Image (cartoon, rainbow, N blue to C red; front, side, top):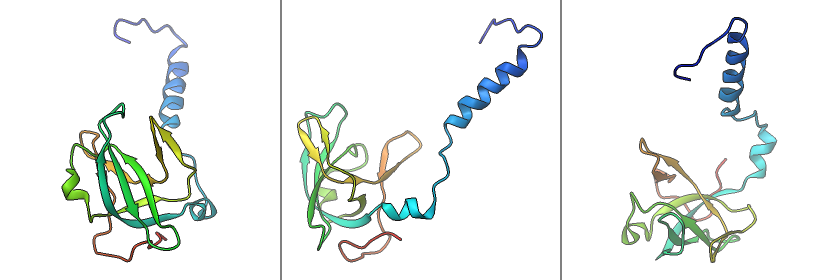
Length: 138
């Protein structure tokens, strides 16, 4: 708004617009029942393939969640911090009960979880100790 002229009576309206924009960035409250609908489990990455067809650099992952979930596929934009050879054997957390999602020519079956670093690059969510495959987050 550089150079904008604010007329008398406009400031409160502008502040309200700013509050609405900021408020839109805050998630709505979720209940514990909402949380229970998510099936978030720990799995071990057993294969990593390049995904050159992806719009952003990514890998195709095969993750073993043990019984009853089994092996599932996921696309993950994690190329900044991880090399394929370092990912095999790594435990990760994923939502396993979302419907499959088409990512270009690849069908992603689970949502592998991560958080952004200071530059917005994905850092995987992992347990800090080895846990059994298929362990459910609670």
